[in-house]
Length: 155
Image (cartoon, rainbow, N blue to C red; front, side, top):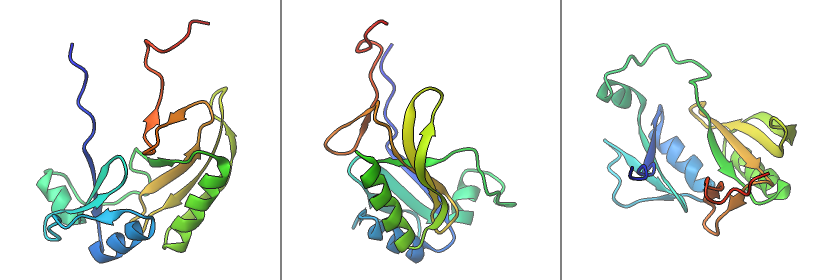
C-alpha cells in the first residue's frame, strides 16, 4: 500500500481576513504573493500552508451550515517548540499579536508522558496548542517527527 499523501494545506474560515493576516504575520508566517484575498490567502510557515478564507464562503463552498458557530469544533491546531522556554515565547508572541490566552503553558501528564503546553485562541476563536513534547523529535524546519513503526525499539 502506498504511503498516504501529506496534508498540504489547512484552511480556516475567518471573519476578518486582514486581521487574520496581521495576526499570522506577527507570528512570523509569510503571506504568499500568490494569494487571492477573494478566494484564499496563503500563509506560509516552515512546514505547512495555512489558508485563510472568508468564513461564510468556505462553509458554503463545502456545502455546510455556517451557523451556529461553536467554541469547540472538534479539533485543535498545534505549534511545537523545542523547549518549555520556546513554548512560553511562542505563546507570549501569540497573545501580543492579539490571541486570547485560554490556558497558560504548564507541565501536564499526557497519559504517562510528560509534556508542556498551553492554548490560545486566534482572532476567530480557533484553538491553538503550543507544546513541547520532550519524547518527540522536531526537524530543523520544525516538523514533528514521531517515530515510525520501523524505528520503534521493542520494550
